Image (cartoon, rainbow, N blue to C red; front, side, top):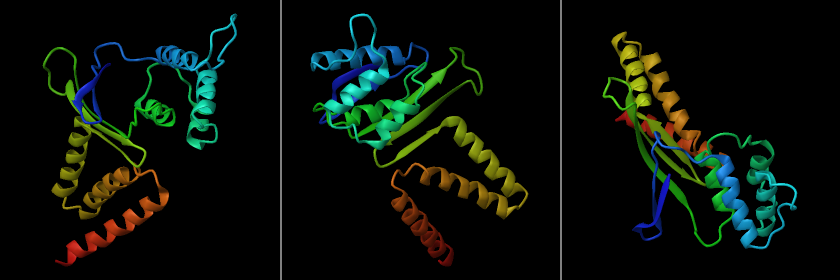
Amino acid sequence: MKLDATYPGDGQAYIAFNYCETCTDWDTVCEELAAVATSLGLPIANEQTLPTIEHVLEALSRHFGGDQDEALAKLIEHHSFDGFADFDALFLIATRFDDGHGLKEIRMEGCWSNGKQRLFESGGDGYFLSRECKVSSDSSHAVYLGNNLRKALLLNNVEAAADVLAQEAQRLLAGVANKAQRRQLQQRLSERLRCLAAT
């Protein structure tokens, strides 16, 4: 993962992410956050032990006033912090520990390939993440969705086709963080579909 904080500018930064290259792991994140904590003069460990990511996050949380943040507390308590660092957790950490960067959203498009051009062995994905909503999809999902919809339509099974579309709408609605807004959106969407059916 490579960051260019100057491109494209105007408050946006470009991150190049290649699935074939080494991804950022939680040990690296811990080291980087520990360096931030140390630069702020925060006590994170004694001389005999290395700091755990949980201790580093707790120290930074107190410093940035996030020690009462439920989502951050849940992350610290329940996340395994094993393997590669996931964007959801990194975004949560970055937005709670805002040292002036003002991160509001992440927009990502990616592609992957096994190196040889073979059918169904390459693809792409898109990802949008903010405090308000999360939307993601990949090329295999579009193929899966289209295939299921086509199967239902070929059988003239309108109920099954409607289920496919309803499940997709439910998947998108699940990405809305605020429960009240999610319920309102579901109601408005239902009203809009009724209006479309009447025209």
